[in-house]
Image (cartoon, rainbow, N blue to C red; front, top):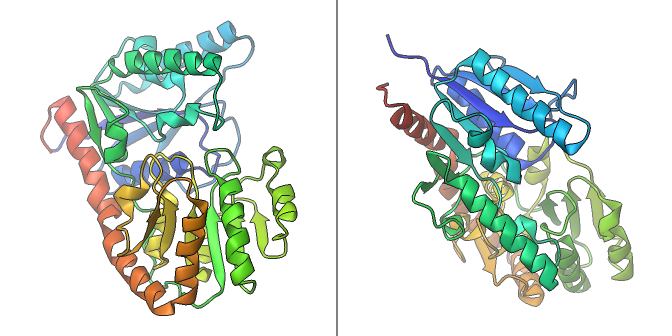
Length: 372
């Protein structure tokens, strides 16, 4: 009889609509349902908040409540983790926490078994503005040093792209891409005059840059519209910027959409203007619907996913005029849209869960040294 691997995921809340939550729902569910894992997920301050994505009913959830001062919070968190580990007795632990604390979990719990760290974002997430003061640069240097120190405690440190390897000059680092969220039977006709972008309003996603480019696109093609789906943050000032650029009539902002597939299917072009990424799942999702993508070649992810001038366009990071030109070329050439879209749908199959999740199974079984 095959040994049933007991896997523990340690993460934060899973009620959000972000990429980490989506990936965890896919991987954990696949491991439990297809590969016969016993999967436990420990969350932090999840409480009774509902999950955004669908998780398998076979998964077992545990929650840690941590509040109060920094010391009280830290003690509640570490004690909660230790208690969960003692109760579950996992064969292997995988930590999905892009915060600094996630990198030190092996030290918090005295590393009871092989441990893996999953990095879902670029280090650049620590950068909050285009220009930094010397104090901000010093702080970054300290944070990055601590990150590397914490990373050394793990048996394996998994990043999402080949570009991410450059950020982590470690002996224990390896690449496993994110699995595809879906591969629908019905795809986009690419005939609607609609461009789409998906992701929360924040500095990272570069919607300010996208709106600047959209001004150029809208001037030439005023009958096309741009739809942006993601958590709306008024502090980002995107609505005001759209008004200032006089493009408000062609741009719409929507909150996170649970059935985002329907929106990809209605779109003819996907745009990603991010300053940096961890991977860019939205690109693979759009491509699964046969939608060609225009993305900045930002660190890191798009260059792993998009084959330039074959299934989409990669634009030098920050070149807003060229970004607009590439979108315009797809708007004006339906044959090019259709060719890119068909290529994208075919090539994105390499990210199907049945291709990606077995890589995790191989890693886990190697680390706990058992045969499957």
